[in-house]
Length: 465
Length: 118
Ligand SMILES: [Zn+2]
Image: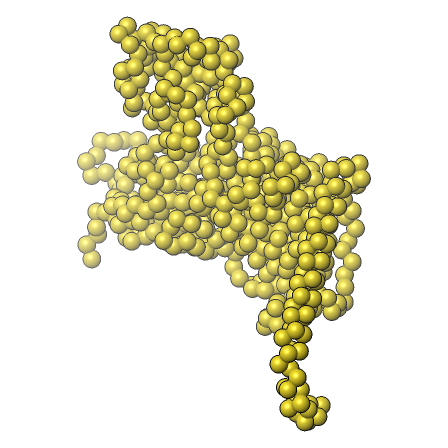
């Protein structure tokens, strides 16, 4: 072939001056056509899946949980798709086969689950289950990049499944649109080989731990808040379970959720990527003899990553120890004293009739009755939005700034003080503190539902965050 | 070798623990090398003392360094509250004897609050 080509080469180059650029253009246009057709196909798929998911009646109530059918070899399509992984030494065809024959469950399609599920789907995991009970909200999208603007209101598990299918139709995605609890968790966990904890609350973390110990599944656990993230694999090759490390749940008041504490979007994204990585390492038995560790990520430290050596499984652990006392799932909401969602519960420290509704405060405001409006949110929140004429003293600094309030109480020191915060929780202990200091002869009340209610009921232009 | 009265300990706080310490992630602390043994008869000037342990460090830290809400740091039993992991020189404190570990000069002790968000 080569020799015959070379004999024709001179004749060919004569005519190529006009033909070849045109041929190149045709090839480029053909490629563009294929790309555009693929885009249309992807959009059709998204449309179809979206329509299907809005017709809830079409969806099976229980996702199928038959064992994942194992394959003996990869198809040419798979070889083409995963080529860059296949040529990796220490991964290769065996690693890809291991992924292809593995069923993984991502619990939580939020900030951690978003990057984790996309990378696992893209990498070629054979079956990927996604659990979430929540729906897509605009405030999720800065970090939960598996969802998008047009899917607001759609179940997160559905939306995540669509994105993974669009990325890699070869990955079988199973949607579990439900709240995981002790009544349903065990059979779901048992149907998978590796479980990824991408949840957002303590109760579900203990639930997943116990279910994974009882079902004998490794648990790749991630968490993130503010600028910090943590990553550990539990219940794997003689390492500890979550309870070995944390036998007692933290007091509910010490647990901060992303909605109250804030979180930089890329922080859970980073931890989610690492969770995908750890799950792939387990499935392919990479580094399987490494001792158990916890990886700490601190985005605003000079040393961003730190890996620490962890204890082994504790023989006296009540779930994974030598004589466990937990042999089936318990009530984790009760155990943790907190709910299985990351929503902030309403606080009822002060009887309702001793508080002000937003409407009642509005009429005080409109009548221009002299009063002090005290906003006890953190300054960073006060800077986002505040009511006119309110003064800002964060709750935790209140005792040492009492004099600033006294200065506002008028000649008779009898002006009423009204306290407001984001949701009407922090304002209640603030009222108690002000009462203890006996600062005014007037009344001290707080506003039920805080500024979020104010936005809902009084002023729709007041921003919510 | 003369025994020193204080040990130089690097304390680190992460996972939100730093919020209790005025947002300081690292504090270089001079911790007493010995603590008195509390006995029933306290008549002596020459009180018995023992080498400082992590248990002493937790109590000392909450008195000397903590800025707010001690209940978010220390538990009823004198240990850290549930949900805090302690590292001694980069390893889980369980591997080093937990509360009874005797502090050494230049030790690095990290207090990490577990995170639950995602
Ligand atoms: Zn355990």
